[in-house]
Length: 90
Image (cartoon, rainbow, N blue to C red; front, side, top):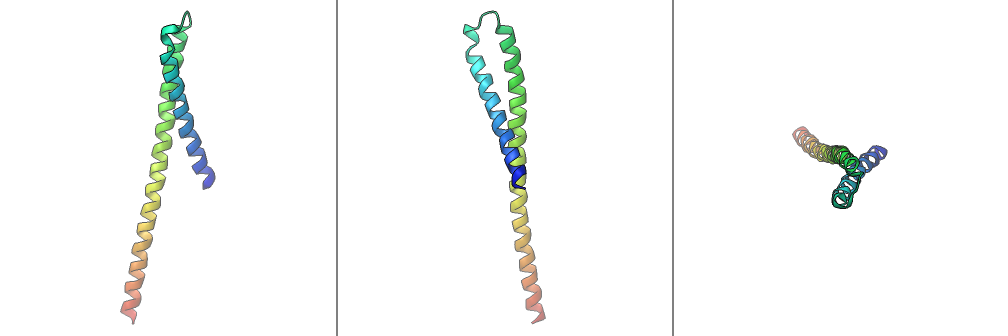
């Protein structure tokens, strides 16, 4: 399970890095010469892929965290039910 968490974190951080690169390319556009078209193309590509990776990583992490909290709540409910059942037996 820890390996999956690490993989999700790496994907999210990789996506954020691609977004950072796209921003740096955007800031360098005014000084670009003949490669301006190529920079725009890669900037768009990095933005799309970076946003997708970062969004997927954050969503998956949030989903896993909410699943853990739901599991804790379910465990508390089952503990309460077992205590009630043991009280009824007595």
